[in-house]
Length: 446
Image (cartoon, rainbow, N blue to C red):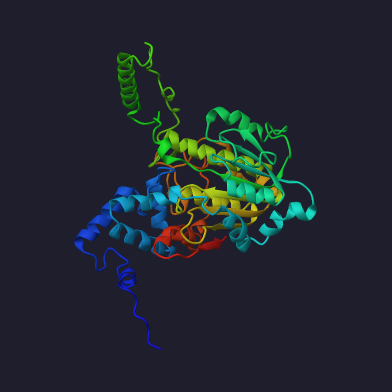
């Protein structure tokens, strides 16, 4: 049979997979400028955690080890080459905006294909003819599709977050209004692990828990950061702008005369302790928005793991780039606490999420304080506000001075195993966004 010749577009995709190929000088310059403007070598900004240098370190450590780098970068480089400015901007925003678009398929077939205990777990209420409750915690509410899917299987749930769960299942979904990202709710969140259970007194443990931490980058960008070097200048500028707007309203007679200049943000932060010499090369948690996001992840993981029953399952949605040291730390820590941990993304381009599905919770190891047993490393993330400096070669390093910086861990280094940056895990991380070029599903079990 005569072989069918490929289309011109297909030939171009196979031949021109690198900037050093047959691209014109103008195309190479455009691609290089767009990648550089993103702040990361991935061409996708680290909008969630604002740590491009750490993403660069992870990229450098994995680019020689993982073929997944090529899979992802081919798609991104071709997009940067071919798309106009508007479509390129949309391409960068798709992974942030298009999430939870196929929850029914993801939480049924996809999870069941990867984890053998998932389907029996979902069918437990009907088979045992008894009530089973799940715990859902995060900065975003449960989607209506997922709520209907679980309640129809006989599950009831307790949803902890700043927003109510979707209407329609009020008799089966209990709502507890606590924001895991807000410092003002920290005391009540900590009480959830107390002897009485705080605002969630029963059941004491849950066989299934969800962590749904998502961030609205556009809304967060309107907040002033009290740790910025020019915070006072920005605050003064905003106050002057508000005062001018107030005067204009007074002149128009729209409002009564009153002082409308209000200090919008918190007071200036206190001077750091004398033992602190710096925030590391990046200073990951120096920004207010980044600290809020790390606090949300920390609280949600601490509560769900603390209230998860023995042999229970945990589902976590990762809100950042598919290549990030924070994701490596979480996945590596969970590997020690569960029998099986899967990291994967849904097939196709309908929805963009990275899921961590952990099954077979080992409570004894989670409670152990013995170094290397599993619970100690992630507990240091839960219990300490200080974080370590930049990660290099799979391990965090302290600054040259004797001080500590704010990143994952504690005042003493928490060393991450080298196999966290292995070829298999990196393949799924990098391949997530390659669906722009080829619609394939990627998954890996670790």
